[in-house]
Length: 147
Image 1 (tube, rainbow, N blue to C red):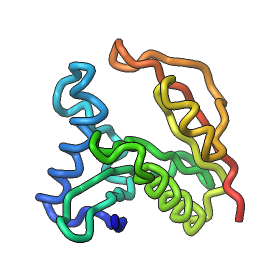
Image 2 (spheres, one colour):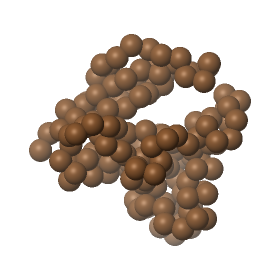
Image 3 (tube, rainbow, N blue to C red):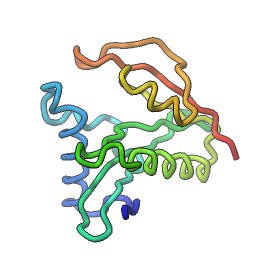
């Protein structure tokens, strides 16, 4: 059974970013370092961890995009744990944290191939497709948070 926690040590952050790179950047040939962005220092980082082995199964981050509006980014689940509810668990955790912070809207810049996934959780397309790193089409999606 996974649990959600935030990375604390240098080693945990190293493993957290390694998973983000392995899932979100390496398959497209993007260089190391592209798994991070300028929002890392002001973000809250979450990881799903196997309670028995301490293996990181998935990661996600949350930051304040504007007053009352949060942004989810870098949702990544280890390949062998995809389609097992880890992503849903991470999204639900971040949405709850966004509510605790008083956010009324939550947005995500998603890959065009992931829009259907986010639509399952109540997000809708709210922007046009843009090209990221020359290979990835991203689309802005939003969700109004219910209290």
